[in-house]
Length: 244
Image 1 (cartoon, helix red, strand yellow):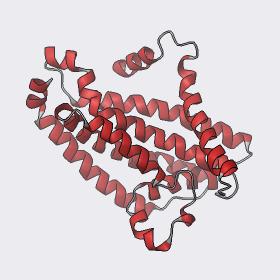
Image 2 (cartoon, rainbow, N blue to C red):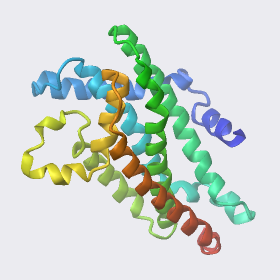
Image 3 (cartoon, helix red, strand yellow):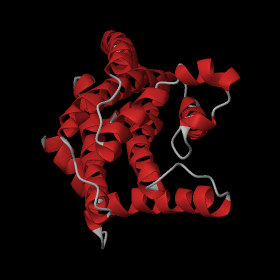
Image 4 (cartoon, helix red, strand yellow):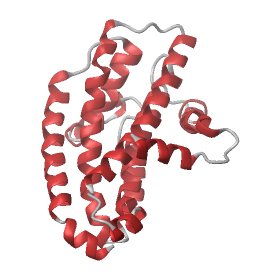
């Protein structure tokens, strides 16, 4: 908790707006996507198009920020790791906790807009933590793998940044899944965001329950990936210390 607080303070030190940037960044991104998809290209996602896009942007931001910076995570703590026997896994947990704080701020923005649009929250909001658990497990599992690879392959950070940018447009973030041609439905369904995005929209925007079967399947896959990633990172601690 101390390291998370220290990271938050360091990121906003001497910035005039401080933590308000947590709110302005995803909001500005959602406005841009809304302008491009709804106003310029006249693509309709049904009612409440702006909220449809806003939920995806804030959800994706938690994932993309965590993944894009994970290959550089251990390198940013090289001075600490190189001089001490500091364990590696807490650094990953600190970074994940930091991004979770930013995501929580984004959820507050979503709640504010839901209230402004007159959309009430239903009892299905209790399933929100479960969806967050699925995504959080996905993030930790993938981040642990990329953090280890990033120590030895310096180019992986740039490659991941390009890949996540493409991945967002291959996911139903700013368009409806009904636009996916039938012949590509199988490829679409193996994308975890075809389950995660609709799950968030179900509990937040529609007030309905998410697809628990698909979420449970992905949670099982992500849990295995997380266990493997954390074990590999921990077992390669000696090699990582030498490399850093």
